[in-house]
Amino acid sequence: MTLSGRRQAAAELVRQFAVSERRACRVLGVHRSSYRYRRGARASEAICGAVVAKSEKHAYWGYRKIHNLVVGDGVAVGRERVRVIRRREGLQLRRKVHKRRVPGASTELVPRALYPNHVWSYDFVFDGTEDGRTLKFLTIVDEFTRLDLGLPCRRGFTSADVVRVLEALMELWGRPRCIRSDNDSTFIATSVRRWLEERIVGTHFIDPGSPWQNPYNESFNGIFRTTCLNRWSFATLTEARIVTRAWQHEYNSIRPHGSLGGRSPLQFLYDWRADHPEIHTTMKIPESLT
Image: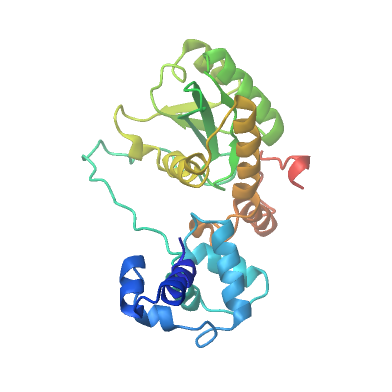
């Protein structure tokens, strides 16, 4: 329940059951100063409404991304005010608990993406439907633009399925120079490696047990799980595909990315191509996104 909802509940306890303000606030976990607060003293209704609406629509986004969206809609508000409004309304995110990582091997030899379609990375993410059956997502990311190139969902993937997915995506987006992945048996399969070799696409396998050597895809997988999979209970495979397709559009076209200057991946690609007309890149923009 949001802070505003708890304030309303406390007011109902005071009005209907004649309990003290102190007791009602203690039961509902509301400070009395917050209970007595009346919206409008520190920010206009329009600004509060815009921040709350964006925060409720994108419940797993932080105040920086919400600020980017609100400002993009033409609302003049500072980032700190957005943070204060979200905290007052009980909309702030819980702090992440960072897991302690065991030191791994050096990653200096891992290629770093220098332009669109330079390095792709891919990995598997698992979920399930309500009947207990497995859902398996193949997440494929362009490391330079952070674009989600494909998010196919199946009950399982064979090496032949991976080849078909890559073939379709290269036809759609263009051919990368290199693909990074872990040592999953599907990715190191002879048929996949031979197919990539025939198309002059390099492969880079991270060290076993070292997911931090694949940071862009791991980051994407965390965003995908937090903002999509953890929010939905899928009844069928078809429902999972429809929901993730809508989420993919939001991620590529709407969600501001901190490392891209508050721009969405697609907007970053447009801006980069406009700023670097002299640099040739094989990345194409699908007609469905133009």
